[in-house]
Length: 617
Ligand SMILES: Nc1nc2c(ncn2[C@@H]2O[C@H](COP(=O)(O)OP(=O)(O)OP(=O)(O)O)[C@@H](O)[C@H]2O)c(=O)[nH]1
Ligand SMILES: O=C([O-])CC(=O)C(=O)O
Ligand SMILES: [Mn+2]
Image (spheres, helix red, strand yellow):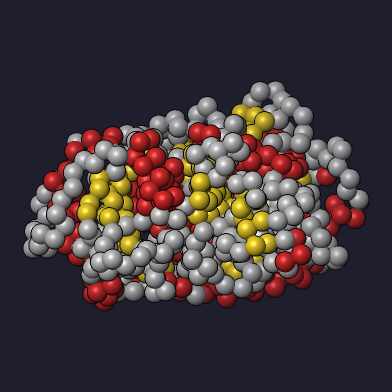
């Protein structure tokens, strides 16, 4: 490993005043200050090189923290088994710390900055004792790109360093930009498990007490106690969504929980589409779709996060700030997401999947029939009749986006790609049709603001329970959600009306009376994308309904699908009574934002009720 320098972390530098420093000097002063607080044994500046990651993986394998998979099946790939109590984001311990509580809003856990800083000072004091502290400089978005931002993560987790190396553009080149004066976001992470001299480490150090604290006003993240992705890879949800959304609000752009794709129709016309679905609701799958309908292609740009900015041309431009995928393993297989399966051929870190006897990995849904014997995600023997899943439901893969066989040629375009359509979705067993188009931008913002979805395994809590998840940003918006809606409305005002993206709502998860999904989903979702593209091109009709514009069934390409009339009807049914109840719930939800709620959204709600009343008469 090339180590830029190792400093003696025990110098007392806490009285350094670094507020006047710029560039590298400011970075170094900050690193010294964190080291003085956390007291690591040594400091390593990461350069992002292959030799660095090779050295780290070797070290982790030797320490029993990673299992090297059989290189014959999966070269340069590893399995990590987390602590069984550190398997998902912990929303109850995730805080937005702003001076005023209203600036965090009713959907965030707010905590006062001075109060939490005092607490963090206590928990971080000595938290890295006996460990190495890594300094990880990274760029979100292509280095030097117009929509890109820099950050630095300090961490005492080698797993986090390796994962950040995959998920971001990490390393020495970022330091050059910092030297040149480019601003950067400071993020600090500790697993919160200091080692006493001679103490044996555990495979997955973490702490039962966790803090994931965002300070949007000073653009900082402090994360303690967890090694899990969303809590520990601070570039991702903490920075690229929570901090970046607040930055975007000040600077006139948007940080959203969205996948990005380039869709090409049989005539060779391309459309760029952004889609927001809550965690574990199909972003990665849609991002890597292989259309079932002939002549169409989907290319992947991003699978989780998009940064969007109005261009001088009146269009909305978007970039994927990440460089890798942190995807849900279960349900990813040849028949559902062959692209992901191919992407995972090597150079992948798997977390909490099962280990096969031949040294490869397995999870529910990878193949139809499980192997006769596995070691499950907890490290215990497993057979198909064990009565439990072999992989954790939120088990994940971490892999470079460049390895995706259908990555788009423009995925790293420094100015991003122009967006033609925005899709909102969620997991709804009832009510929400397969696809509906918003009548205009304002209605689209209303749809985004009222998204609700059944809970999944991506966060702690009760799976299946319905919760509001506006813009799929409930756990990720770094400021008052009502201000986020207002920001969307004002972004709409800056776009040229004929060039603004069209907005849609989709639902792959509607169920019939038998409890089965009505829509086959996955590759067949291309049929819905086909209709969306045709709407953008002005080539498909739509039927007005109280909740928006529905396709005429004859305009949907359903060739080769085995759907009964009745199923189709159920897929598109708009039940006025249930929508009245949705409207009542929306009113209640909106009222929790008090006077911060944009008037335009109350108007949209009133208009929906009016249309429902008309439909009923
Ligand atoms: N029935 C059905 N299930 C789907 C569809 N698309 C995805 N899923 C399942 O939904 C789960 C989550 O899918 P992902 O694509 O990983 O979801 P995600 O939104 O990327 O999740 P995060 O990475 O947590 O943000 C997987 O088990 C998929 O198999 C679909 O069209 N229909
Ligand atoms: O952030 C994570 O831990 C995983 C993820 O993508 C999500 O939960 O949306
Ligand atoms: Mn995903």
